[in-house]
Length: 416
Ligand SMILES: Cc1ncc(COP(=O)(O)O)c(C=O)c1O
Image (cartoon, rainbow, N blue to C red; front, side, top):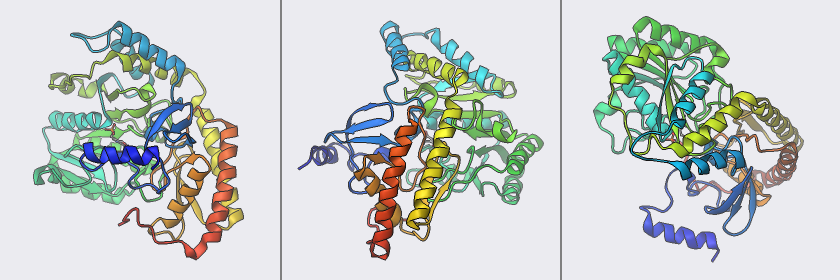
């Protein structure tokens, strides 16, 4: 038995159904390892010794690569001085100043642990600020697992679910319909920076839709909240809707803001300062200083380096390279979304059997990709790594073309 299988068996006993959540390989191709012992830059080493170039970046955390020495040194140094104590380290102010300095709409910050904390706080503050209940979110958009927006109904009450009204992302008419449905009870419109749902093609934000969301909030007194937890700093050195000329009232951040160290944030404008200041917002670890020290170095690098241009360049190289080898193999592969957060889906692939086959072939060649979630380009990736990836994709796509209609139905996942 492999070490990975052995650990999976042990996990099955001590967790309710084995490894849970988005890091579980339950829904990945069968040859995907679950357990890793080390990671550096864009490379992760599995317990059985195989190395992978990782296009998931722990689902968007490691913008500057795993084990970045400067960022980790700041974290370790701060941990040695003071981490979570009965009070607050000055670095918390440095971090908030850096953040509000970078993000135009932001005049203040509240630091939390997870992206879910940040989006949930955004929803609560919007409701407290307006004294209203309804929150508009786009169908299929993920804002975390808290009951106000959870995608699966288990464990939520009817009231928590009826507080939301759904619209279709990028569809102005459906947004207007949702606003009309909310009547005088609209607290907020939530939006992700672009449509980055699982299983379907990604879509860039339509500037007309974004501007209309802003206008409708201004007209009704509701707040506009951008959920930048996943896409933050991968499209802009500002809140992501700056790319379409729209500034929100609140924005939620997480994942890469301290290069994977555990801190997330809700940022807000002065308009909402009073309400936010009067709310009871707290968490045992929310003022943890170590991740904030890592965050200061990360935000400085975001501000001062050419990381954004670099990941865009690498993303374009990947897109062009993979397009070329897909065309050569005669395989219909759609690459959607911004080049820094690519999604690969195959034509005529309702149960994703082609996507799973492709990813399994890529994993055999040491490339870790995802069959139905967007991926992430790390600044630690190099042009040579992309060349290796495209060469692997060339072989994987040839293998896919050869397998053709003979592929078995996909048993790993049920796609609606
Ligand atoms: C857009 C978006 N919002 C919120 C969250 C929740 O963040 P977390 O998993 O840190 O709670 C995620 C996580 O993937 C996300 O992608």
